[in-house]
Each structure stands twice: as C-alpha cells, then as structure tokens.
Image 1: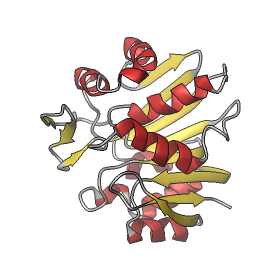
Image 2 (image 1 turned 135 degrees about the vertical axis):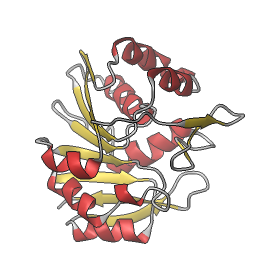
Image 3 (image 1 turned 135 degrees about the horizontal axis):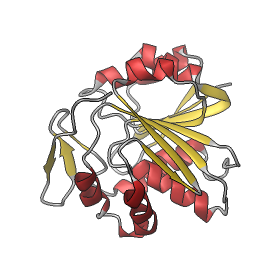
Length: 221
C-alpha cells in the first residue's frame, strides 16, 4: 500500500510537475494527443479492442491514459467493461487529479463519470472496471494474478525514475502479458528497449510524439 501522495508543483500553464521526479505528468505540448499517439496507436488500439480486453499500466498519474482508452472503447461501440489495471506508488490526490484533467475538456464526459465514483483504488462502471494497485510495482506486479493484452509503460523519465524501467520489472511485465500482447512507451532509452527484448518481446523503435524523435513498441510473440 502506498503511504505517500504525489507531491506537485503547477506550471503557469497548469501542468502538474512531480516534485519527487522533477518531471511533468504529461506532454507540455498536448498530453491527450501524446497519449493517443503513444499508448493507443502504439498498441494498435482501438483496432484490437474486443470484449474481455485488458490493459495494464505502470504509473497511473492523472488517469489521463485510462480515460483516453476508455473513451476510445466506448466510441468503438463496445458496451462490455474494459478491464484496466494500473500500478502506482505515489497516487495523486483526487482534487489534484480533477484540476489536471480539467485541461482536457474533450474528455469531460468520461472524466466526470470517473471522478464521481473514484475511490482511489477502484472504479466500476458498466463499461469500465478499473483497479489501481498501490505500492512499488517491483513488489506488487509479481503478485498480480492477471495478464494484459496491452501495456502502457508510463513511468516518469527513465533518467529520473529508473526503478520503474529496470530489466527485472520488464520481465514481470512480459510474464503478465498474453501471447501476441503488446506494450508501448514514450521512451526509446536503450536500456529500456534492451530490457524488453531480454524479457522476450520483439521491440521496435517508432516515431515519437512532438519533440520526442522516437518511442518504443513491443510485441510478445
């Protein structure tokens, strides 16, 4: 169980920056478009969506990635619940989360429904079953019983948050991925790609979003 909340500083543009990791929670250019580019397109979503689909994530943050996936799920016409599990060591206070998500008015139909029932760990709606597992993912992920069809690897910068990108944790990600499952991340750091490859993923470097030249996509054959 996490025993600390995220500690934030807000920029003049109302973007939350982690005091602990000195890194913004989302792109300074367009967090929503980056999420769609990296985590949806990077996992070939929504094309792969099907009833029973499960997404897992390292780093829940503001919840923007989850909301973006959930909105795409509903827009795709699926009415069964999307399963979404996220691993988060330093959860954001609900008021801070609401303030951060207010920057994305296009997401308000989903943001409002989510925040109305959000407990800090679970959210169950007709089309969303969300579980946030609190604590250090290096300890909590190995105990998780699930396996994901797609992973959103969204810790803070590997240079500032290396514990969320180590080879051992990438192996646990692979162990909790279905055959032909995928993973995507905004970073193209060499040690992250090598860790994913060593864990059994086929890894490719793809065009990144905005100022980031490259990102990483991975498939478990």
